[in-house]
Length: 149
Image (cartoon, rainbow, N blue to C red; front, side, top):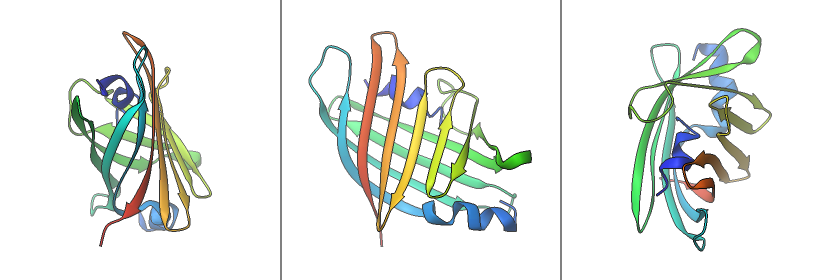
């Protein structure tokens, strides 16, 4: 059921370490997911963003409702002009590539269509938002995540 929203995801050089710094770590939390024609439901996510020795950042996670869940994994790299490009390293059903930008403490990535993924750092929390267009219509999810120890 959250497939349409996760398809929206479909989800460093030393200079990049500073760019991604506000988002690095392992985060978990919950919020709500709205599917077309259904009441909003509890939405739980765990995500991890960490630098690699391969000049990039691994972005992976799992989000779920009572109806089911979905995992994702992307390798993010900075391209010319500050563009962030992500390469799918997991699910074949998710987009092969996503791209976006970091502006301050907001990371936005999309699939070039209707899908959008956003992480916004606010103090000690991350505000996680995703949206996508599925067969049934628009899907929207939002969750507040806390850094895990």
